[in-house]
Length: 463
Image (tube, rainbow, N blue to C red; front, side):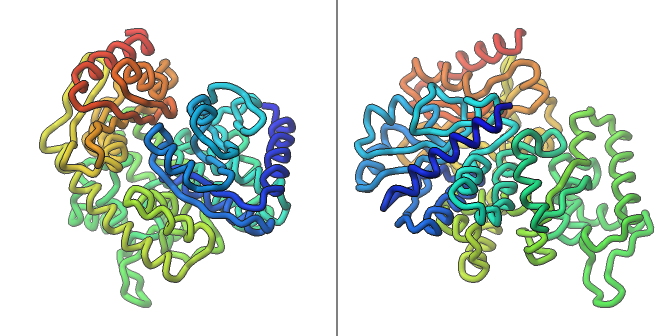
């Protein structure tokens, strides 16, 4: 890892950005994209640069016209490195790229960790790259280190039990100023924001046999462990964060034994414990106290086309923007539950090397990928194949979202490359990470795509 060379490049880009009088940040609409947008916008405004921003699903030929209408130099964040030849050809204004996706080539106007032997898939998210650019502008921007961690977690870079690589440098900065508490703990979503039985009831990563989806069983499970369900003082149902150290140990052990009793594979049991990141300046028992829950708030904003709300929350708005974000989060959760139930009722289709389902016209196309990732745990799907999901865009194109797991990646899966290879001959566009990627194609070419994708994945996994 050439971290010194990477920092030098960040400083070069930072100096160029500060020299601009006016800029527009164009970021992706997911958690990593919104967090990285917020970091750059805040840093640039602090540096005295007039800065606006937009967030979009992807940059392709359909979105270039909007970018050209902005009338200012542009900073693409969490996108651009894979589309740089298109940008060089069609973008009329001066542009920069702050990205972590596999780059097509190296250029003076972009910073990408892959050029410095830093894996952008696991070791540094776009938010991390944006953070180091911001830090190079002014050391005081280390106060945004917590958002760098939120973006990395939102990009699933902690899936191996914690953040690694260059992400650790961001953690050091955040710890130095008392902004986070990084420690090993139960990784179940909702440790801070959900009452204890609700945390177990809604757990889908991993699926808890007999507990997930059954509130009464969750209450009984907790009580049989001798854990007081209600706070003796206030009478409110306790959260995981309220438990004593011994109670947390007992609950974790019982959950681990539950999974083992149901012959859960190591991929599932390993998900139970990992490094978690508590944001110490945020209010306890809110979604913003935990990095993973914070990232879910951002995803809810972006996927419901309110990216500006998520950016405002990242930049510190705990009044109007936070109120809007909470409402979007509830809507997001409701649609995910409904979408997952639909997939459960219809079941997954299966080819020799992939699973797939079609949510076109029923599931919001911005959510099909999230639901695809949830099906491994919620439906107890065997993890030996990636899951491909389809949705229909407002423009009538077929949106493709692919989700894998790190066992598949270790076996050779490269979803982004596979989607790109499968869709290009069909008049589509695709790309992304090894474990999660997306694409678009004409709807009538779905069957051709499935055959091509199945063949390509088979070759990658050497089946």
